[in-house]
Length: 117
Image 1: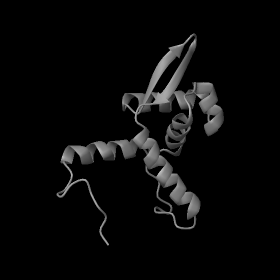
Image 2: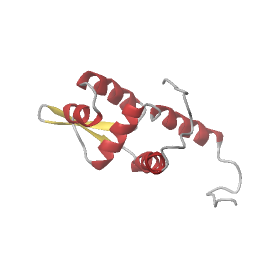
Image 3: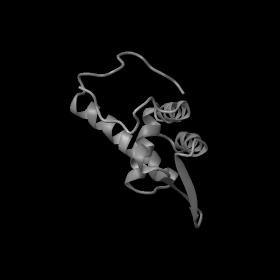
Image 4: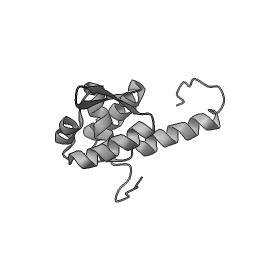
């Protein structure tokens, strides 16, 4: 069974490289959780740290990587830095993967294999 595609040929190599880079950024479960949370609502570091179960310092480091990659943006509201997702299509991909592993947790794709980014 074939799925419909936007291309009749292979996607452009630059598109594949960009997609791989986005997946690499989301390969950390903490960064994936941050993106998922920010897609629900904009947030500051302390709220994100609570939601993802990490320290504000660690969350700040993850946000810096996500910002550098263009996945999140930041704005100031008084003394607070408020983060938001730049592209909600990444949230759709994250949600799809999270739902897949929520519905079929017994069938992981990578057993015992950790990839660090």
